[in-house]
Image (cartoon, rainbow, N blue to C red):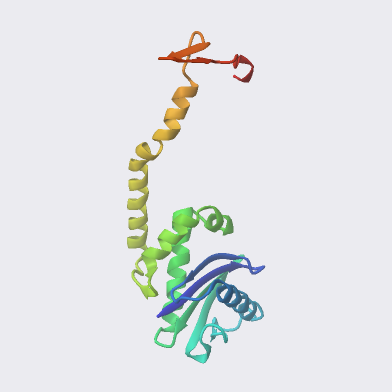
Length: 193
């Protein structure tokens, strides 16, 4: 079972952190730091598997990672998972991100966090692998994008209403508003328009 998925840059800044086991916030931060230091000190020509750190479960857990450009993709798994299978899963996840963002970079992970989490949920949910077929994952993401665009008319309604009010062309702004016994004097706002 997958216990955690961590993506951080070359400087140790987390860009995606997903735990499938409950840890307090301070322990999660320690796990990210410890994992970064374990992975960073390894040479590029050394294998991509190492035993989990002391915080995440000790020798029963493994860290499986890949380094792409400025990002490390690290999956923490228990002993029941195949190392090569997880390496392939990391490759599928990165290639899917690459297809969805057209040459994915660190900024895509920062500014499109909701989409990245949605892609991750198509691949892994609750620590279990759901889908490894990249074409199926991309098809589901495209379906979600179409749904968001079709609902865009509803979610964009408040913005269109504000824009319409701003663009009202009144020949003269009313100076006095009378509602029953209530008389309201409107100040001259022409200097602000």
